[in-house]
Every structure is written in structure tokens, then in C-alpha cells.
Figure (tube, rainbow, N blue to C red):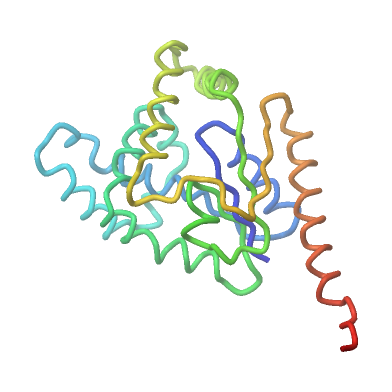
Length: 220
């Protein structure tokens, strides 16, 4: 079973996807960490003329050892991830890694921006997670504060809005709700309620597919 979980930053998609992975015993990949790792690798060259080429080179040579979540969660790295993600060659370089993970034997859970539209369009279940910008800003602010980081909520709110716009306008991306994706708004839900809702969607979708396969064919 392949479960694709897409949505904007701080919508709760990562927490839900990892929870679904635990619930169903499936391996989980936060694909955003791949772009964050590339962004971190070229942080020192953000204003340089060869930023794009360096980002492509970083994507082509990305190693699993570079994907260290504890060092990739700052808002700065998130902004850089969004910038490298608009580079077509970067996306191409990371595609096979994501695709191989999604299609491994037994299935997987992946979250990101374009899992259900580009990486695994054949996913058994697709969820698109959303929440309003203010709620997402507050969630992300609390995450940073829990790590002892000072937070400018005004600046963080605008970073989230700017990243949404950049991701949605990305000519090389697929950041939109797939036609067969289930929409889950987490604005008013705590994580336990959101996870219960996500599990219900997965169970209902898989039961529906099983039922359609078992339904007897009508005689002509």
C-alpha cells in the first residue's frame, strides 16, 4: 500500500504521515528533508551567480548521511529548500530516490508537495492536508520555541505565505490537490484527532477498493 500525503508547510502532513507509517507498519519518508538537505548544502552560495549549478551538484551527490532532521528544521533552511525545489534539474536528480522509496515491496508512506501528483500518482490513498496560514505559523513558532529559538511571528507568517506562493507557482512542481486526493483540514484539529481522521480516510478508501474488487460482475 502506497500512501501519499501532500500539503503546505506546517499543515501537519509530516506528523500525520509518520503516524500513518507507524499505524500501518510502513516505512516513511519525509521528502521535504531531501530538498532541505540540498538547501543546507548551498546555503553559503545563496546570493552567488552559480547557486543553481551548486544546488544541482548537491542534489546529484546527496547521500543519506546528509539527511539529518535535527539540522534541517530552521525557517532559513525551509526557505532555501523552496528555492532549490524550483530548479528542474534538482527535482529530476531527487526523483528516482523518492520513486524507489515509494515503490518498494510492501509499500510506503511519503509526504511532500507532489507525492500524489508526480512521485506516486498511482498511490492507493492520497491525502492533501491543509490549514490556514495563521495556524501553521503558530505551530511552526511553537516548534522553534521548543528548541530554544527566538521567533518573530510576523516574519514567520510572511515566510510561510511566500513559500506557499513559490511552491504553487513552481513550473517544475506538482503542488496541488490531485483529483483523487482526500482533503483534510487540520486547522481546528489536534494531532490525535487529525491522525484518527487520516486513518479513517485510509481505511475507508482501502475498504472501498476491496469491495469494488470483490463485487460480483453483472451478467450481460
